[in-house]
Length: 292
Image 1: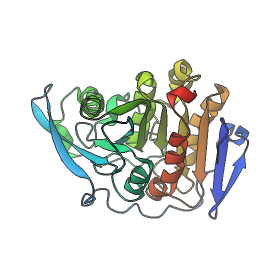
Image 2 (image 1 turned 180 degrees about the horizontal axis):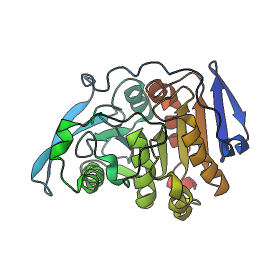
Image 3 (image 1 turned 120 degrees about the vertical axis):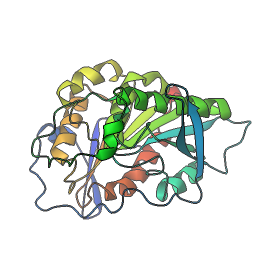
Image 4 (image 1 turned 90 degrees about the horizontal axis):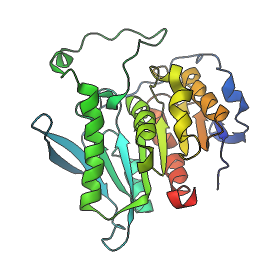
């Protein structure tokens, strides 16, 4: 199915309905009940995924990244690439499992997950005040040793891994994509806009982009005509309430961007990852730089 630009999908009880995007302008009520538990953030790596490291010269450290290469990838044909950014507290394997790997295999993708320097790097996104109503997090003892330029290092790690992929593989520059969940969804919006020339399209999953919301239009304006965006969101998400994501969609609508918003009513902050992944891969398959 070819999705029209500037569109909205809301899934209720597993039924997807294509609607005009106008309702995204008005934030809806908060979820009536808490979402289901997210489950463990970090689990054993998918055995299909390669565990790698590279030397990060800025801090003289070896940083990990996770890599899956479809069996359909060959040296003589440019292959599509997806860079996948994990959420807060996750790691380079967080999005590198389950149906993401199945879809990457089927579509002939290279799928790579950077660490983003550490589990809380935020990929260069600006520091903001906590969102209204958020439960304060207890101090993280590990964060006490974070470098003062952590976010800058996190952003640089992502771009370094992108360059590693280009050096090792025959990456198709017209089919290179960026996606991320929660903190990684915010990173996807930020890095997607800042380095827009690298991406054919981007996909944000429940983006925890609260700090950037006041400047959403300003940030998106330079790429409004050139960068397709898909956003997936669970209606029962209590970590990233749907109202916040709808405000991002309202900005995209106002800028007349080529976007697809997929809101799944029954899903929460964790379940939306796998439930929305087919939509993201479908959207990516339909967008290449040559087709813009």
